[in-house]
Length: 347
Image 1 (cartoon, one colour):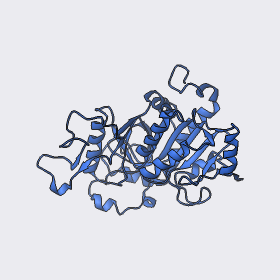
Image 2 (cartoon, helix red, strand yellow):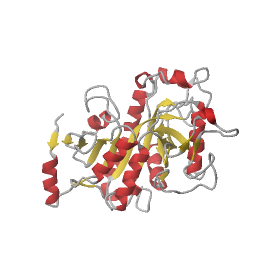
Image 3 (tube, helix red, strand yellow):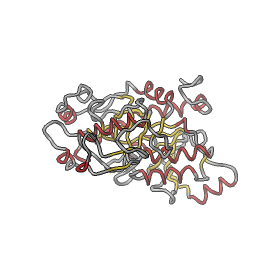
Image 4 (cartoon, one colour):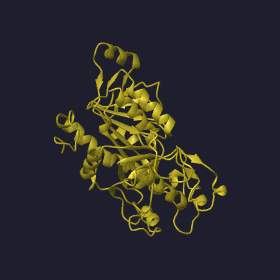
């Protein structure tokens, strides 16, 4: 593989001359375990190797060097957690080297999944991204009688108090429903990896969806910087997503960075640097968000990511499903450059 290094100073000089680098698709991953190629993969490696992201662009103001191919696909690693994601996305959005006004954004990473909705190795397209950190909280050991959780929404005195206040502090983000459905319809029949270890894992659960082979679905994501596990917190996640979406969202996956990413993209859209109607979030299930019957939540925390039978298949699923969307956008750029899919000119 040949790497073409474009220094920041050279790209900036091109920008000054009025030659910003046009970007068609930004693939956003959150972590990489080692090198970008040739070793144990994280979320970025399959994209680098298979999409031939051979051009390496310096990005000292962000978490990780950028990579790009000759078709206008730009790949980035934000770093884990909402803070790093927000900072890295903002740094890219303000980078004068790139023209991102027509770019589509594909967030593609792994997540935990609610066994009521899906199985390990599955891929979920989110329409709603809800923040799981912005709240008041008291310790669960001090809960008043009748409280289901110690989490209380901003500006409220009890859990899930109505009416919900729209404080506009980043509690939830609603992606373009037509674009999300377009991506789902385009990829719903993509074949996903399965294994004996994954079958053994899912057979421990009673939910029909948990016991299914990996599949593509639509389902919303809860973004929080605390890695949590357990049946009770899963119930909180479902209730929290329902509350902050006015009953329109359904919690399916738990991740970390997406509200940070969406907050920065929201600000960048206000400045005209990006189009918020061109954002997709794809989360693939590396594990269940709660242990099977007979095991405690504390015991499940002892299992490392490398031991999850769905870890590598989830990385594979993120690329397999996301690749279909990226390829469609790039190969039919004349159709999608000025009109996002799902609209009158969309597919």
